[in-house]
Amino acid sequence: MDTTRKPPATVAQSRSGNFREKSSARDVYPAASPFESLTSLFPSSSSSSSSSSSSSSSSSSSSRPRSTAQSISEWIPKDPVVVGIISAAGATCITLGSIAGYRRYWRRIRNANSVTSGMLERKTWVRGVVTSVGDGDNLRLYHTPGPFFRYPFKIRSIPKTAKELKDETLHIRIAGVDAPENAHFGQPAQPHAKESLEWLRATILGRRMRCQLLAKDQYNRIVAVPYISRTLLWDKPLPLLMLKEGMAVVYEAGGAEYGPWGLDKMKAIEADARKSKKGLWALKKFEHPSDFKARMKAAEETRSPSTATSSRKGSRGVLGTIWSWIRG
Image 1: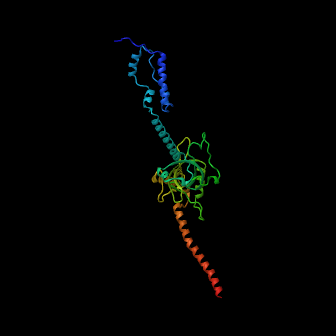
Image 2: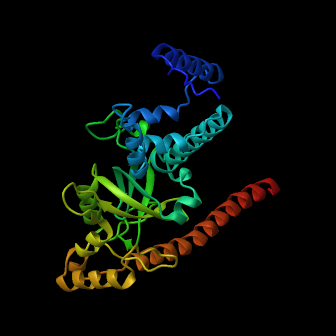
Image 3: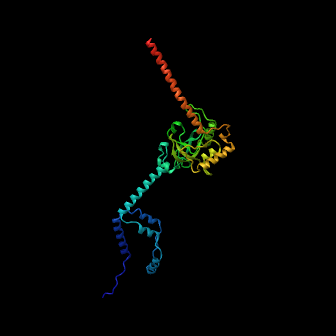
C-alpha cells in the first residue's frame, strides 16, 4: 500500500484552475444578470487569514449568520430565461403603473366634459387657479396638476386671455349654497346680488383652490366643495365662509350636496349670520333666491302666452285686410 502523499498544488496550478472555471462560466453566461449586480452594493464576508487557522475559522463562520450579499446571491435566479421573464414583467408593471398614476393624478382635466363618472364616484380632489367668477355661487377653475405649475419646478403657465381659456376650465357650482340671482335673460337682478358677486370675486379671483368633485348638474356644471388654499394655515372652506359673511344662503333644493359638514351644520352657520344681520340678512325685505327664481319663472310663463296670442291676432288682422281688399 502506497502511503506517499501527493504534493500540494502550486499557486500557478490553482490560478489556472480558477481561470478555467471563470472562463467556462463566462461561456455559459456571457453577461452578468442585472440582479447579480445588486450584490456588489453589500459587503462580503471576510475569508480566513491563514491556512493554519482554516478549520477554526470555518467552524466559527458556521455559527455566524450569513451576510446580506450571500443571502441575495442565493435568492437571485441564475437561469437567464427566468431573469429575462422577471425583468420584462417588472418593466411592464412599472410602465402600466406610471400610466395609471399619470392618468389619475397628473393629467390635466380640461373641462366638465373631461370629468368621468368614476371621478365623481371617488369624489376626486383637484387643485387649480380661479380664472373668472360669473355669478355669486359659481366659478371657473383652471386645473393645475403636478408640481410644474409652481416654483421651483414651474415649467408650465396658466393662460391669461379669454380665447386661450375657452374650453380649458372647470365650471364649478359651489356645493350647498345659493347666492342672490344676477340679472340675465332679460330678468332683473335680485337685491344684494351685486354685493355677493363682488365679494366672491375679491375673495377668490386669481387664488389657488382645492376642490372636491361631487356631481354634475343639469347645466353641465361640476358641483364641488371648494377650499381656499393657504400656505401655512389650514385651507379655508369657501361655502362656510359665504354663509358666515351673509353672501349666500343654504341651498335646499332636491339633490343638494353639503360636503363633509352636512345640512345641520350649514343651517346653524346661516342662523348665526341672520342673527348678526350680516350681508343679505341686513336687507329690510329678504327673498330667498329659490323663491325669487320661482317668481321670475312664473312671470315669464305668464308673459309668453299673451305675447303669442297678440302675435297671432296681429297676423290675422293683416291677412284679413288683404283678403277683404282682394274681395273688393
